[in-house]
Image: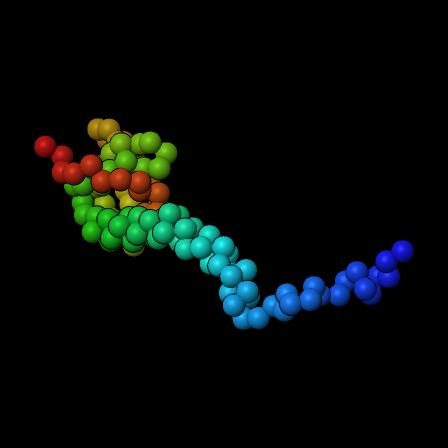
Amino acid sequence: MVNEAYAMAPLPGGQGGTGSLFMSMLPIIAMFAIFYFLLIRPQSKKQKEHQLMLDNLKEGDNIITTGGIYGTIAKIKDDVITLQVAENVKVKIGKGYISALKGKEE
C-alpha cells in the first residue's frame, strides 16, 4: 500500500521553477489578450463614438431611439430631448435612449 505522504511527494528532478510558473500562466495571459482585442476594445470604441454623437446633437437632427421611434429633435434641454414624431405630436425622451443619427431633414 502506498503511503499518502509518499504519494504526494514531488517527482525527482521535476522541481518547478519560475520558467514553469510563467509557462503555466501563459494560456491565461493569452486568453485575456484575446478577450481584450475581440470584446473589450471594440466595445469601448463604440461607446466613445456613441457618446460623441450624443454630445453633438442639435435641433433639427433626425434620430432613431432605442425603441425604434423615428423623429426630429424639436428641443434639447440638459438630458431631456423633445422629439417630434408627427405633425403636432411631440415626445420627451432621455438623451441616453437615442440610438442613431439619421441626418438633417430634407
